[in-house]
Amino acid sequence: MASNSARQPTIFLPHGGGPCFFMDWTWGPADTWDATRRFLEGLAATLPAPPKALAVVSGHWEEPAFTASAAPEPQLIFDYSGFPDHTYRLTWPAPGDPELAAHVARMLSDAGLQSSLSADRGYDHGVFVPLKVAFPEAKIPVVTLSLSASLDPAQHLAAGRALASLRDEGVLLVASGMSFHNLRGYLHPETVERARAFDVWLTRAVESPTPERDMLLTHWRQAPFAAYAHPREEHLIPLLVAAGAGGDSPGKRIFNDEPMGAAISAYRFDG
Image 1 (spheres, rainbow, N blue to C red):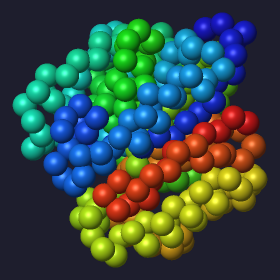
Image 2 (image 1 turned 180 degrees about the vertical axis):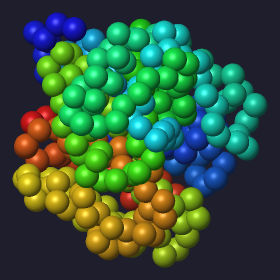
Image 3 (image 1 turned 90 degrees about the vertical axis):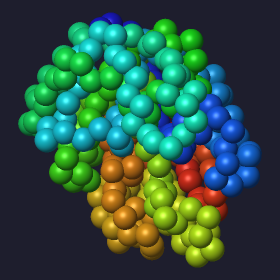
Image 4 (image 1 turned 90 degrees about the horizontal axis):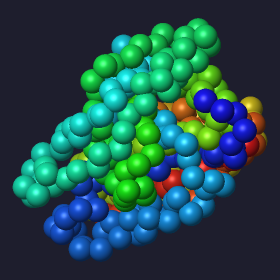
């Protein structure tokens, strides 16, 4: 790919709850996800230029090795349950990019990280739900990247560093997850203060200069209420990839809300 494009940032965004942006929300107030939707709708306008491609790390895909999807026409994976019938008929026909997928896998391998390609992996809901809002025309090529099943923070920081130069090729690196992800905690009275405490810590960590930023994020389990915010960490680990690809400058919180009583944030790295 050409390297004369405007340098893209790297972004960690909340992908919401299931297909929440495309249905009447009944698990709480009807406007629960409105603020997140507005944030996603405005995301493209904040970029330095239209991305040439999107590289998306989803908290809903784990493999033994970092795996990039080389599917030329990825299909949607409706990996949620219990939602209205029409949400299983959503469409978002963004093309894949097998050449970029191979490039991503090589970059990871060259950095000493195990990598692989998938010939047919589609777009899970961590990919198509937020990006259908942010890029509704579905014309920008997309390559999805799995987490490593190790969920090791340092390994995912390293993966981000290995992919950082994609930003100079006009590729927007998107890490899709949730900064709070305790399904039993939503709408629970004790969650409000616990989620806020974790969110304050996480924001301070992201906005710290390196190497403190990377040290704090690597040891995120030492944060207040970390285990409560993330009983399992797959929705947080994409943030480590975003931070690794974000260069040496501090990150910045660009969105915050409290759907169902739980503080969630989005972060951007421009370094």
